[in-house]
Amino acid sequence: MRGAVLYGPRDVRFEEREVPKIVKPTDAVIRISSACVCGSDLWPYRGIQPTAQPTPMGHEYCGIVEEVGRAVKSIKPGQFVIGSFFASDNTCPNCHIGYQSSCQHRELVGGAQAPVLRVPLADGTLVATPDIPSEDLIPSLLTLSDVMGTGWFAADAANVKPGSTVAVVGDGAVGLLGVLSAKQMGAKRIIAMSRHASRQKLAREFGATDIVTERGDEGVARIVELTNGVGADSVLECVGTQESMMQAINSSRKGGYVSYVGVPHGVELNGEELFFSHVHLHGGPAPVRRYLPDLIKLVWDRKIDPGKVFDLKLPLDQVAEGYREMDERRAIKTLLSP
Image (cartoon, rainbow, N blue to C red; front, side, top):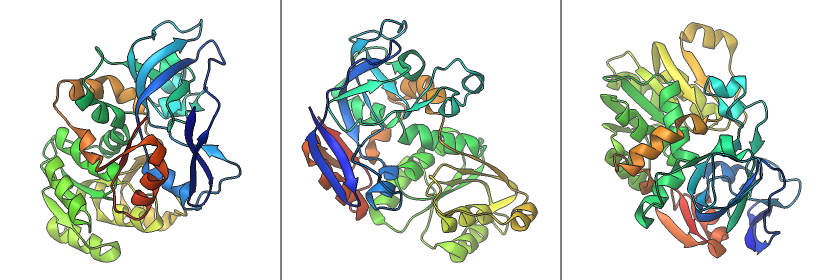
């Protein structure tokens, strides 16, 4: 089979790869229905996160189970399944409290930008849909594997409550789905920080009530102004840079909540500044598996449509173009069809 392989900065190739197979008795092999490019894939693509060797790419996936290992009990061939970017046994102490992305036996799932994928720890990682979905539901179901699950965690970790005021730092797919999640959780006011018209439009569709175009100190000042000098109850940091983290912390009210789900690059916090901010901080790699059953139901019942974040659709063999479009911010998120 052929799949995406990253060789170095801005060097994605679509080339022959070994067909995945069952390696451990807890594995499953699935036929990918749709794949995509993640914003976090851009860190190694841009060379900010070094690539030591040619690396198969892709960690968001959904599809039909083709084969399972002899120890797999709950997942069966023929089911349509979705799983997290971290495989988990869903039985360890960390999993039991809802942090499957810190499972004591976790494994990173990679290589999903291809027709076939091996998923470790299948019983604990994969969740089946009620039936085989219609084609129009597949993009939204795919988002649950990471970007929607991460947006939901961002809102949950920031303690979004009915009637609250929320600010979202970052207008990529995660930030936009953070807006959608905050709306679903009952936020009354949602301030999206964005400078791009197409992203502002989608943010409004997802529930944003205000748009702030300023960044840094000016962005903080604007949010403070919009909240009558108080700051937001909840702030979702969905980028992972020093500027975005400080913008999030400083946009929060005293006693407010800040979640951080953007993979941090060069982020350093000053202890004294943090001490006097009186802010609650919570984040990390999203425990997508915790939310999958509820999010599948929301999509299945057509209560949410997170698949709208895919504004570019390409065949899998044009994956390199999908990376370029996202890198140059001409696309929010690329959907790939095997």
